[in-house]
Amino acid sequence: MNEKTIFKIIDSLMLKLQKEPKLEDTILLSGVPRGGTTWLMEILETLSGYKSIFEPFHRKRYPRVKLLNLPPRPYLPPHKEHKELKNYLQKILTGQVPSPKYRITPAEIYRRFTTTKVIVKFIRAN
Image 1 (cartoon, rainbow, N blue to C red):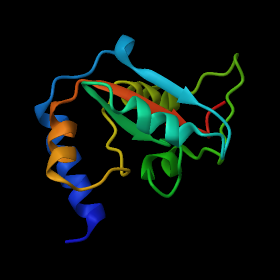
Image 2: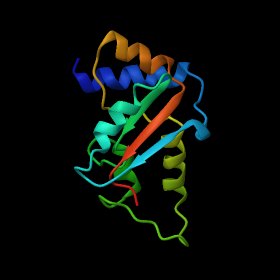
Image 3: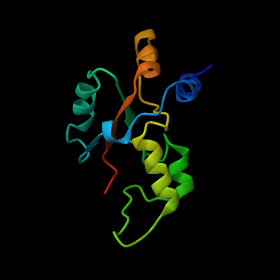
Image 4: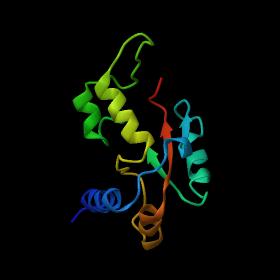
């Protein structure tokens, strides 16, 4: 079994067993490529009760982004409605989207099962 499959199994179980995080507890981190956002996210992950969702608009890591037919750096004008994107963002911001970026260690797996708050890191958001 490869790492990607293990991540999917762990996150699928986690999403079924944990209570849904509250939107108001979510930390949104956005920046430019090579701007230090990953480093800052890793620092914020040390906060008790938080897990991260890493680059949820990355087309290769998140198959749903391909289905939404979004460009690499999506832009949605303020007057335009995109229901599928809105639903996807709601799932991201409430921690209902599995994140492929973490290490498989017992401590990390335990943390992902017991966290109730989310840090979302974007460089592809506008």
